[in-house]
Amino acid sequence: MIQDLDFGKLDNQYLPLDINDEDFVVCVCGSKLLAACDENDILTLPTWKQVREWSSAEDWKLWTDCPVKYAFNMQGQNYFLWMGEAGQPGDDRFKYEGTRYYRQLPSKNICFALMTAWHLFVWYRANRFCGSCGHPTVHDAKERMMRCPECGNMIFPRISPACIIALTNGDKIMLAQHAALKTKRYGLLAGFIEIGETAEEAVAREVMEEVGLKVKNIRYYKTQPWGIVGNLSLGYFCELDGDDQVSLDENELASATWHHRDSIPPEAADDGISLTREMIRVFSEGKEPK
Image 1 (cartoon, rainbow, N blue to C red):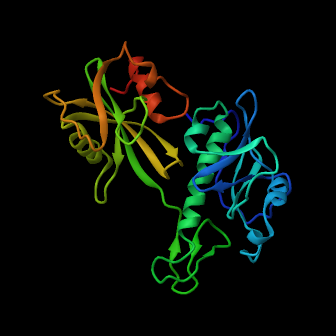
Image 2: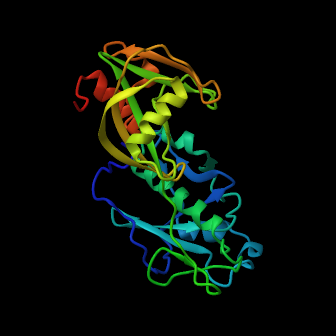
């Protein structure tokens, strides 16, 4: 999956580090992120030296100090977030692309860095002001936390738990196409966990809401950080309990159909990135948890 790095690991502990010229910088324009892609679809991020040369003098006036925030260290390399508008890159190799574009490329390490940095960027951007009193927030000196100097409110990065649900019926699994996505790609049923609800209760509720079916034998599989939408995906397998007649929620899904483990469509093949695709492959191989 996307978080399975080639070597080493991502160390997400916050450190109050100064940025160096050769440190990588994640730049955001709207909802797009900046990277260069070579002829082999290998991604490269700009360095601080490059970004500093591209940024405008007007942008720097918005900040009292260096407008970058330390993000994390991945495999010995420091990554930072540029919190302003880096503007158009001075190198034609670099382009702003959406997260879905990067998900299709083989550079899993850089893709994971981009998605995790995007999660942090959105959180920083949304918490420049205190939600309790409206006062501007400041970054804590020791940990990744925004603090309100006026009322003392402490704001930590938000992580939203969501269930990925592999609903099975003997040798068949339910694959879904989501209504909001203009694509033929297949996925699994899924949904966010509500307040006061266990993950297992969310599994049963989401299946009933989306396809009108009851479930039994809910089993945990594994989790995955999914920075694209700031959530933590919790994978579960479960079995159909009773009637298999689907009652589709057309606001959520374009389709929900049963597929035999021996005839999984190519559009649902494991992409090496998502928990959803791994769970589909595990079922197709007959290796799902019992």
